[in-house]
Image (cartoon, rainbow, N blue to C red; front, side):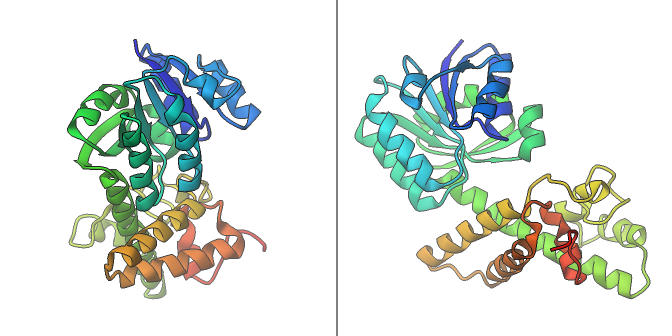
Length: 297
């Protein structure tokens, strides 16, 4: 049994912490939202009155927070208070520069650290089937891997500090672009009189196949588990896709990478969100491409 502090018990953090409890670990959590604390408590998480209280005696500190500024604020507060040898694992999706800064704060206090953003959404968090993309030293990864395994379907050590964040934003840039391409193809098929099922049967087994078609098809019918069959309830909300695309564009600008399709996808998702669809699954952008939105705005 490992003593774990978990900071950030939202939609992702709560089921992740619950799976750690199920795996036999002692988990103490903190969040600013009382409802999140109540839910975590019902899953067996010990509740602390503050984040410094949560890390008392912890061997591992896991954070799952909205943005880089939140992660850095928590690291600046907690790293100096942590016991010697504590491992810090940040599972948030944040910008690469903030991830590097967080690693630096840990290193300055002789702490090991891993950035380990996830893919798989709330469903994957609940099922314990998340993909973790980890960045950090081999020593830190070796310590983190058995703990991450309780929440994971797959764990990939991507490289040194911030490599996990780099992999996450690159992957999600591909996803954002491919979903727009998939949506455009289905809209074109509709205009040409081709059924959704016919296009799916061809594209899902031909050179156009991709996750956005085969697993997350944006039209009802061909893939019964896709959000298109549930009024585009997320899933992975459009607001989160826009966040990740913006992170990718920030990284592209700071590194000098040329990403014209990534930039275009970011613009389209910004328009989709501005139309009041930020809480819609990101695959619902097909309705935007049709000139429609799901809600009355």
